[in-house]
Amino acid sequence: MDAIRGIRLLAASLMAVLGIIYLIFAAFFGSLLETMEIAPALMASAGVVYLVVAIGLFANKRLFYYLGVVVPLVWASMGIIHYTVTPDPTEFPFIATEIIVILCCCYLILHKKSS
Image (cartoon, rainbow, N blue to C red; front, top):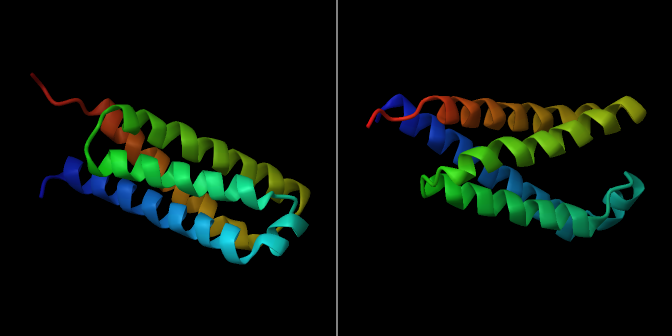
């Protein structure tokens, strides 16, 4: 397996895992999310978007490389802003995973196959 394919599969897998976790949070921890000032519907929609981007990355569609940068960047930014207001160390794994996905997708964007 070449490096580009491995990086793409890593990004897709991490996006899928985050999407599933966000959907689980929205389904089972709705009242906890409301106390954290996050609407469960917003978390569920983020989970669906993450899964769609993961499927696009698995399918090796170039558009989803860009979405793999933008979508986690928005959520990581919101997580960092939320952390500055209400410090919660449980947000670190999510932010770190999103940063890894962003870096993987940036690498994929910058390494075009020669034609």
